[in-house]
Amino acid sequence: TFDDGLESDFSVAFPILKRYGFQAVFFVNAGTVGQDGYLSVSQLKQLSEAGMEIGSHGFDHIFLTRLDDEKVRDQLTRSKKRLEEIHKKEISFFSIPRGRYDRRILSAIQEAGYRLALTSDAGCNTPQADPFRLRRWALKGSYTLDDFTSIVEGRPKHHLRIEHLLKRSAYGLLGHALY
Image (cartoon, rainbow, N blue to C red; front, side, top):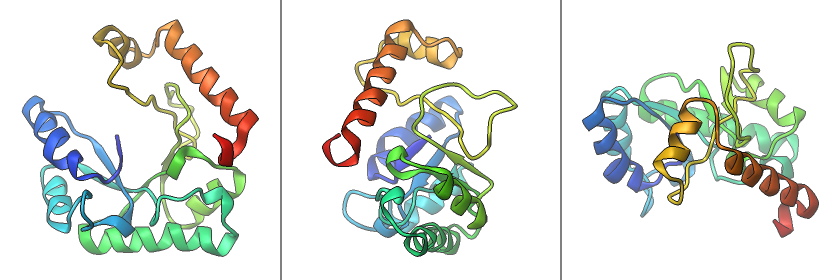
């Protein structure tokens, strides 16, 4: 998965994915489509035509938990509608901007018509996983091939799990503003 809809998703990642026959989901902030440094309408269409999935990452890439119910609905529905207009297909997948959510946000995602949501919670998913709280691992340039392999095999190395726990603890102590 790729979040934010950056132009480099198309110019860097997409050619590599095509070369090796991989598919991916590109989660796009609908409000940035066509802006400098972000995917254009043409690039989104090319990704879709090549078999890549397009998903929503909200309209403005803001903390949904900081918004009232009406603004949350607006972020979810306006993004979905805009991407469906461009994509000419239903947008069913949602990646929670900045990974912050609560029960209210998860309910709103379902009510907006999405079929699943991805979090920024590190981990692997089983068939029993909640489709609106799917986990994934953020990959960093500092990770070795061995680190990557351990993640793909569903057995992330001990230091990666500790890194995630420290990050999550720091966020819990500091909150949105200070983290």
